Structures are given as C-alpha cells and as structure tokens.
Length: 301
Ligand code: SIN
Image 1: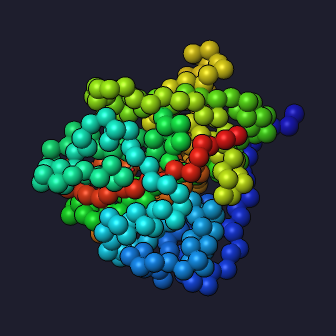
Image 2: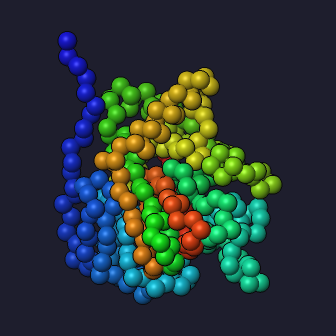
C-alpha cells in the first residue's frame, strides 16, 4: 500500500536581476536584505520597480542603517498604497511618547514600544496585521530605532504562501471554499490578557485562502492573533481546523526567517504572504520603533 508523505514544494529562488540595489535572500522562501538604497531620499521609478519585484519574491525586505523621520517613512509607504489608520487610533489616544510630551498623536503611525512598565507588547503572537479590518494592511513598515542592550527582540516571519503550497491538493481544494471571521477584540482577550479598549472593535470575514495580487500566488489567511471562526463549519470542526492550520504555519521552520534588528533598521513585510511574531525575550530592557501600514483593497480568493 502506498504511504503518503508530507508535500515538499520545490525550492525555487526567483532568478531576478537587480540593477539599482542589491538583494541578499535569507533563504529561498522568505526574507531578503536590501542594500544600496537610501530611503530618506526620493527613489527613482527603477528603484521602486525593483523593490516591488523583491517584495513579491521574498515578502520581507530588510533595509539597514536608515535614519528616517516620520515623513520619510510615510513617503516610502505611500509608494505602495494609502496609509492605514489603526482602529486603536480611532477609539482612544494611543500610548505615544509624543502624546506623553503633550504633542499630537499621528494616527498613521503606530508606536511599537516595550519597557519596564509594559504588561504586554504588540505582536507577541503569530499574526498578520489588523486582519479584523475590511481592508486589512497589505504591508507594514516597522522602523526600529532602539534595540534592547541585552540583545533579543527579534521578529520571526512565516510564509503563508509556502504553508499553503505544502498542503495536499485535497486540503487546498477544501480550504478554497471557506471563509473565516477575524475579530479585533481577540488580541486583547487572548494574547494580551486584558479587556479590549471600549468602543467596539472591527470584525469582518475574509477567505481562508487568498490570491496575493502582486505575486499571483495563493496564501493561507487565518491567524492566531485575530481569527475566531471558520464560518461554514460547526464550532468544534472550526476549532480543530484552525488549530491545525496555525500549527502548520507556526511549527515549520522551513517556511520561516528571523530578523535581528539593529538601530535604524526598517523592515517592509507583506501581510498577505507572511505572518509574524515579535519575540519578547528582553524584559525589562527597552525597545522602540514606529510602524506605518499600507492598505490597497481587500484580500480576495
Ligand atoms: C508588530 O507589528 O506586530 C510588531 C512587530 C515587532 O515589534 O517586531
């Protein structure tokens, strides 16, 4: 009797030529370091096209030694879509150094901050950003300016494209007919162990399998951070299937890369092709950065 083994998609590092920047892939699946580009200056159309090509191929782009102000950061982000306003900003004043100093909070910037007073940190659970929104961010750009003196504070990324491709054709076909609910209160009631800020949080449905428009590849689009239910299944069936999919994405190290931050690193990640997990292994040391996210429509099957 024939035995079935886990599918192993062929490694296929894209063969791309870059003329205006250098691309050093971490592995054939996800993540690349980009050099030869200064994000504080306007970029040429050719540089932008090459960044788009690298983004479609490796999903997580790491730019080091980028001394950026908020306007530089936002100008770079706007090349890829409109800027996202986090629901947190729509509901309450965000905890921001600027606010603490009496300055205005910028709703297009999400402060990512941990220190001795932190009870939880953003993203310490596998997730894609803000999938509870009808138009969830297609990408995010995090600029870290302070890293913990003791080391740590890395971010892990897992390719949900690769995770989809590693499933059997029968499972792919079954998942292709399903949708899931994503609830903005879940990070608070789940990973953060706190009550969600008052005012009601976005809740929406997206397909379980999406087609990423800029690569044409299919990806799993359910995440532990926000997804609560597969809509077409009974509760127990939904719980079991979500648990399988999350473990499948999170436990396969061959779908993943790990970014070690240095001050003034900007990482641009594809929220529709990867999930990420911020490792909080450095308490009580401080870490600080600012994130801008980009919207460009709804993810579709
Ligand atoms: C996040 O955007 O989820 C936080 C990522 C990080 O702090 O590395």
